[in-house]
Image 1 (cartoon, rainbow, N blue to C red):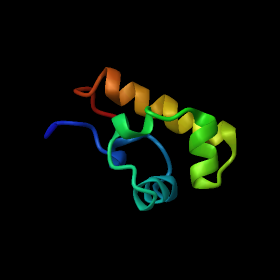
Image 2 (image 1 turned 135 degrees about the vertical axis):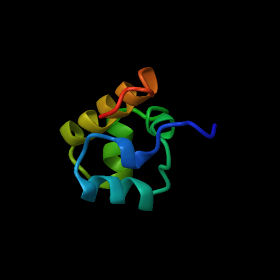
Image 3 (image 1 turned 30 degrees about the vertical axis):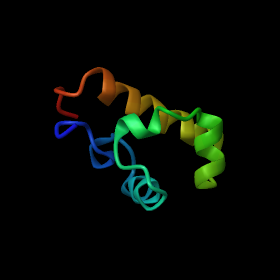
Image 4 (image 1 turned 180 degrees about the vertical axis):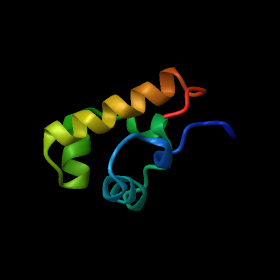
Length: 68
């Protein structure tokens, strides 16, 4: 989708956005296909950080028009 929320729109640190992008995640929807545990393993980060990432991605997917 052309209007799909991208990783750069997530309300997380720039370094995490870069890590996600470099790991092949390009949209919020691509993130929520995975559990926080899977994200944690894929990115080499702690599960609590992955939970924050997934939470932020869900916020964008559920309300893509809202400005962060």
